[in-house]
Image (cartoon, rainbow, N blue to C red):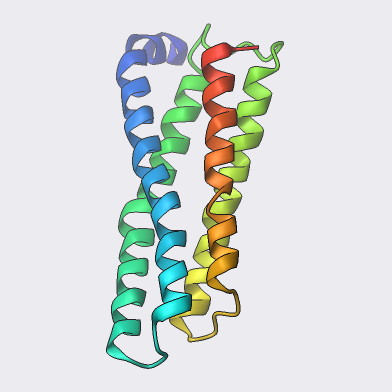
Length: 150
C-alpha cells in the first residue's frame, strides 16, 4: 500500500529531493565563506559583527535547516520506493556515507555559528577555506554514485 503510493508520486518526490539538495548545497557552500570573512575582517562587538551573525543565523535556520530536513525526508521516501534502490550494489552505500558526511558538516557549521554568535570563534579564515572543500568532495561522491551506479 505505502509502496504503491510512493511509486505513484516517485517523480514528484525525486524533483523535490533535487530542489532540496540544491538549496542545502548552496548553504553548505556559502556559510563557510561567510565564516571566512567573519573570522578575517570583522571586528568583535561592532555593528558589522552583528550583521554577520544575523546573516549566518538566517542562512542556517531559514534555508539550510529546512533544506537538509527536506533532503532527508524526500531521500528516504525515494529509498523506500519499491525498485529504486538495490542495496546489493555499492552505490547506495557510498551515497549514504557521503550524505552522513554532509549532515555531519552541516552540524559542524551550526556549532561554529554558535561560537561566532557568542564571540568565541577560535578558527582561522584559512581553516574555514579548507573545510569549505569538504561538501564539494562529498557532492562528487554522491553524484557519481547515483549516476554511475557502480
